[in-house]
Image (cartoon, rainbow, N blue to C red; front, side, top):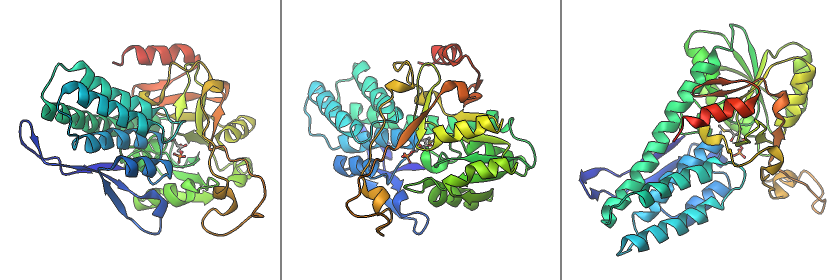
Length: 356
Ligand code: MRU
């Protein structure tokens, strides 16, 4: 859930300075602490250390953050300002590699000022801030639409399995992507139980998904990742819905490590497997999942996750943060426009044709 603070328009060309405002997700569920910042380094680090995380959320945070940083620019010409914005955007874009929403939103902000003929620096700063706010508002609306389409897949009494956190915390808020169908179904009076994988090593499922679902009175059961097969075999799961960090042109979808395994388990147990994501998560420049860059993270996340040593100090560790679900194991991609069905190459092409 992303927000901004300040930025009241006093009169055209005169905005009160504002800041990016985010919940520090590393402190959840124990404490709800906000970070308010207009520092490029703090925004970069907040994304890298996952104080803000989840593909659409980091896109929104970067866009609003770019405006917050650049409002303080001392540039005296349009060219100088555009160069500064480009430099800050390139810096923020390096914070995490897998979620395409990050570069998508930064590029959209850049395009906005590059395409404007405006030469007044104050008005250019305003344009940048407005674009960040628009990206945020758009994301919230897209997620609600994802929820409305996805809720049609849920029936009263359903068990839905999800992985990682693809809820309000992972997006502009409050519905999220994969959790949006459950939220809408719940609002419509259906009794849904969300099984939330704990999601090793950083526990986004138990720390964040369980926290936000409980806060919103949706029935949630947390399980360890290695219990999913058993829970499916026991007949508790009717559908799997996860989010995505980047969807290739052929429908292969990167998501939190463990999602690939879940898709194989769902296939074996004949349980439909869905991805929920807005168009900003689709990267048509990437032909298939093999081309998606997979973030490698620090060994300490596995060896001493939350401060306690749980493996020999010197042991070698491999810690890829994401994996790729092959499109043939995906029943549908729930988007703001409806549910895309295979062949995804065609349905994705049709969806993107209508976007700017
Ligand atoms: O490493 P994270 O916590 O940023 O990974 C997040 C996920 O994998 C989410 O499922 C994905 O970004 C979709 S969020 C709506």
